[in-house]
Amino acid sequence: MPYEWTEKSDCAAPRRLTLWPHRSLPRRGFAAFILGTFALITIPLYPLLGTVVLWGILPFMLLAVAGIWWALERSYHEARLREVLTIDPVHIRLQRTEASGATREWDCNSYWAKVNMHPTGGPVAHYLTLKGKGREVEIGAFLSEDERKTLYGELTDALRLARGA
Image 1 (tube, one colour):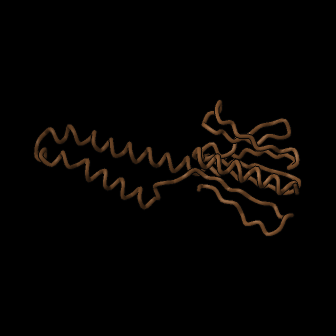
Image 2 (cartoon, rainbow, N blue to C red):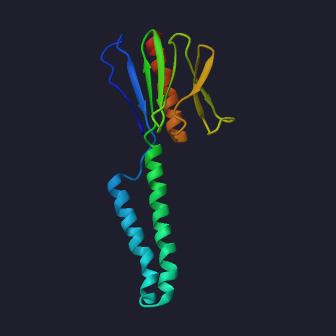
Image 3 (tube, rainbow, N blue to C red):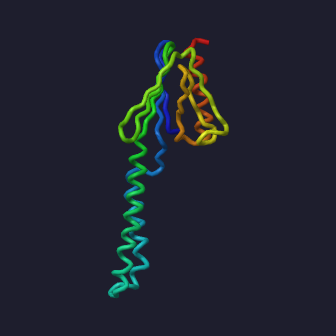
């Protein structure tokens, strides 16, 4: 799963949850995919070698490979997004670092914080939010539906443990 809890050493120690978007294609696979795409896209060009038609089609094929490269690079850039949730007996704090480096924070007293799951009506199915201090913030919107369902249970348990209930 594209999130991880720190190990809990004792009840008073804060727990930390780090979330990140899933990356199914590692950098090494990225290079192989671009090379494979380039090799396969040139196959239809072999019969055109030595003709004028080759020079008419080649720029468009190279543009297609460049477009795929650009889209995958953009995806890697967007995947630098991180969310860090810290839960201790007194406070809960969510820090979201965007791909651009901008940071947004939300904090609340752990006793008043509440985890909500909205099965419908949100931007994604089983939308997960934290509510407290008069504000409701999303968490893990980039996770899959099953991952959000699992995370909901884990967050509920973590908050209950932090409160000492």
